[in-house]
Length: 328
Ligand SMILES: [Zn+2]
Ligand SMILES: [Zn+2]
Image (cartoon, rainbow, N blue to C red; front, top):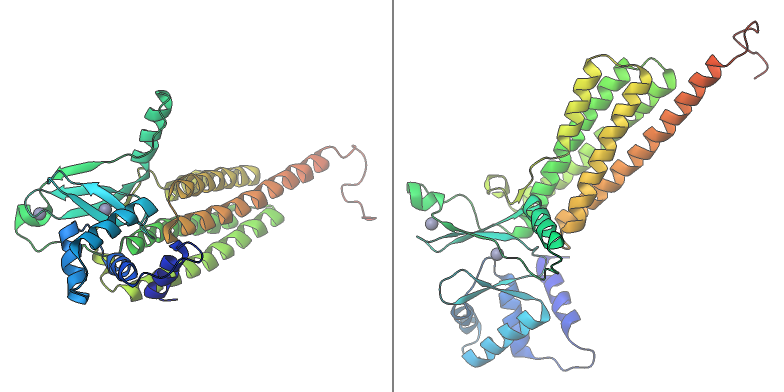
């Protein structure tokens, strides 16, 4: 399905059953949803007039308000004395950097900021409906005279790009961790578990990289666009720390326990942030990844328990009897 097809389907889904089509409204909504960035009502009037000059300014204003009420558009106030509008269809909630010199705005998302807002609201028993964060100042291009960074990409793609980068970095450090653990583990079954996990990480890594490649095909400039999604601590740090612990020399049980800690932390990280995001490709990537990490966690816990069991049985064999029983 192309972006335009899915937009048309989306618009169709907004119309109450049995209501008649409104050609003008459809046209206005379609043109609006094709735009990136933050339009004033007058920007939209200009765009619509290029397609059909018979549509009145009043109709466009009314439709814009209808889109805000229907949740297709968000109204933003950058302190310019007039509102701007951005579409919210496949466009996750975000914060803005606003340049006072060139009036351009740039979008970003920080889950740490959102978590903090939630924390404050909860502590004050406040039910938050909307939070707006704007950073006003001067953009890099206006400060230095250098050409602007390749901004203006589709937010949905930037979000997916950053989510994939985080997942890929975690997958890589997971692979490194399990390969090392497999080399160090003496218990044959434990070693096979680590080998299996290393294989899985390799396979997932391939899938994620293919997805990243597809995204790049949709937007060849994607890699040079500024970061959209910010995190204080990402999950790949967990596996890197785990690999360091392994290097200090651990036994099989400890190796499994370190793996459990890494996977648990990673699962929590992706689930916690994934649940916060609004519906988007980025959210999907995080939640799918969280599920994979949970499956790994469960596998490691099962292995840890059976290793403990095997070791206990070996220890509690009554003395004097042969170590190996042949009637197994
Ligand atoms: Zn600027
Ligand atoms: Zn925006």
